[in-house]
Length: 194
Image 1 (tube, rainbow, N blue to C red):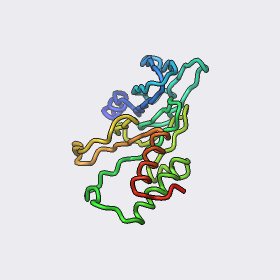
Image 2 (image 1 turned 180 degrees about the vertical axis):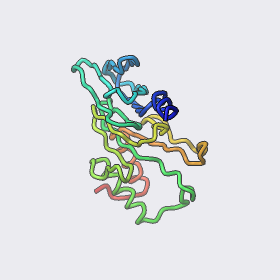
Image 3 (image 1 turned 90 degrees about the vertical axis):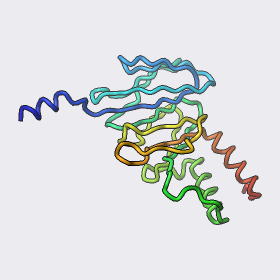
Image 4 (image 1 turned 60 degrees about the vertical axis):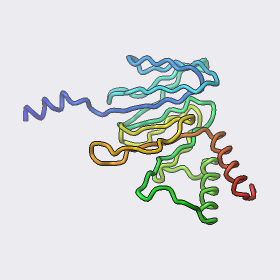
């Protein structure tokens, strides 16, 4: 019984990780879990690790001070960009990328992407996200999850972790980028943009 109590007292408790994606400069004070945002156009990001007792992240900006709560353990994303972030969990699968798509599959991709851009297809169950500016969202209980920002590509290959599992990776784009990519796809495929 004493050993169990000692282990509980020494364990780190619930861990929370917050990935901040911002438009402008950000300065992080790890001790107070405070972020100071200087608005701008350049993309910047930072990671903050919170303990169980930390309620969340405080953001100070010219608009004032806001607290973004992190109620339980896991990985969160905090959108301090001036645009909506649209993202999803990357499914690496076992079969690789298909060599071709049917018209029906292409129509389904276009339709679901248009819905996601409009915030209609986002869900925790599907691991798809529509994150308005100045909002925070818990993505997963896995604190080892990786988040890829709008300006980096998904890795071409990944290695399994020590447990033999595929890593949990989430890719985010701005709504503007997603619209441009969708329009390029529609034009390339000779589709009607209605």
